[in-house]
Image (cartoon, rainbow, N blue to C red; front, side, top):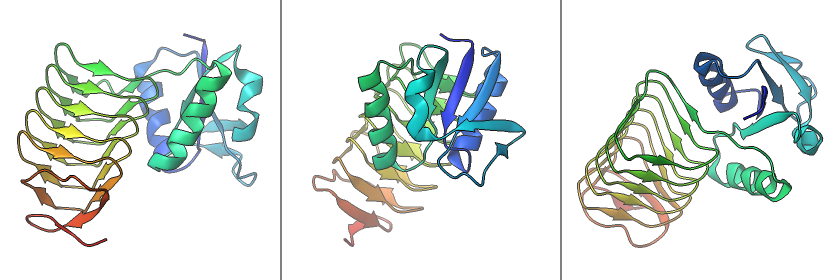
Length: 206
């Protein structure tokens, strides 16, 4: 753990990550890296350099990929890992984390989220505001669970999948890698092929 945290991405998701980091109160300072040169500050925190210059700060800073896109976040995190960066886990103090929960490096758990016991979460995942993940779930790398989504027990979400706001997944369900589940959708059967799924219950549309 370093004394400073640098967050790649100074808008949107990155700001929420910075807010979590500040509330965790374990770094002496928090700042941003962002390739948009028009952004000088965000949330009162300084943008000190471009994201592409992250390598210059490996010795002095923990570095976190604060980007909502699963594919972009994966690219950033894999690059940081290849450079040997110190990559933290961000957990909001108002999140509830059960016993024997495993969280992968570069993952973020937002305010009001619940992750119940014996759930395992891979690298670079997002459990967004107010999402609920019950017991014995497996979230593979780079999964994004949107605000207010609900996963029952023993659910498996494949790598790079995204569950939209307010979506629900019944118990003992598996969802393939690289799936997009629409807002408010309800999954009651296994999804075995990548694609976009919407509706109640879900149907594939793309």
